[in-house]
Image 1: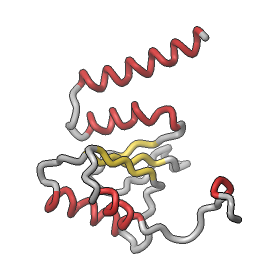
Image 2: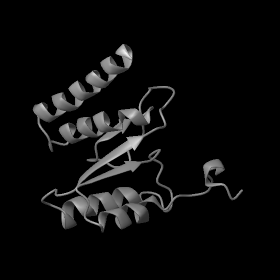
Image 3: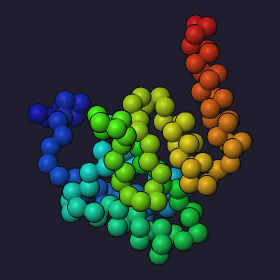
Image 4: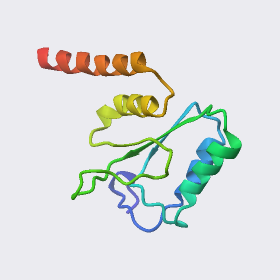
Length: 132
């Protein structure tokens, strides 16, 4: 199938390599959307993130957030990509700004004022949708 919109995922994902590619650009924030299964090879993404945090970015210039769209049926939780990386489950792409705000708050990169502003903005959008 040549249509990218109809592509079906299969095989392994070299997630660690893609994370490294993204980190090399020096982003302020890196958002990784993944089911948390790092299998090419297993554990590479977590090790890349660990080494990045400990050796290459000890000043924490880059915020890293993991959003997982796959929920565990038993515990309604999500699989973490790596220890120390804030992880949140995501069901709706519209929730992305708030989830990143929560993750930045969880990681200590923002304060309660920024978190409240993000939540307030979401509430305002919901209210505007209700009035429309």
